[in-house]
Length: 308
Image (cartoon, rainbow, N blue to C red; front, side, top):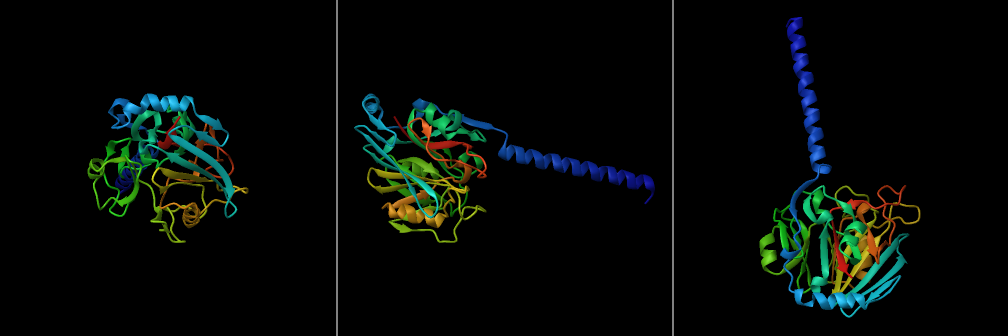
């Protein structure tokens, strides 16, 4: 091989390497950074059976009794407590609702898409939420069922073993596997919300994770968010601080134990880590952090909330 041919091959090799680097960078940006909007939330397309009660609910909100740790109206009761559990600060919202569809969800910027995010507190304020928690961060994934407020946005399964939380219009919780039912079938059966994160923490009152279970490559002790149902109309939302010297964080098993101690029949793990945020009455209640060095909210794609 002569010198000219060697230079030509080196040139093409360098060009190929550069194209490969640029393509890899684009893939990463497209996956994690570049926002893509697929649908704008239209308030009038939400399939709710409670429209007739809208004025009554607004009047209930106006007549609500609110303190730093509670909210009481005719249809909503929320009591907030803070406790210590395994060297971790845990915030618990005990919730009683007269209507199952009062458990609502909202998307960042009222937009269904990828990499479209806002802080939990910003989404909550925009939707006049009295209580809110981060959701499943659906926008970081390309698959997994997404049903929000009775509207089907994504029907692509992320795997037959993926455990989703289904909240039906009557407020009943059920955890399903995507391999057992389609998103359209869930919608037809009355699904109001479908959250695709997991895993299920408590099933029929029993812990359903082991001490070695974890989400992906996450650390054993993390900030956590979870939601559970105790009985008809009675729910809890739990957020645990973590990754700081003041609050270690919980493993999935510890979180399941805590939820079980609250008496839940069904409990489900939401997105955690830096996403874990609990909002109540205009303020963030917990101390969200990604790395433990700074206390600040992470922007997320969605929330679960109760409107004022």
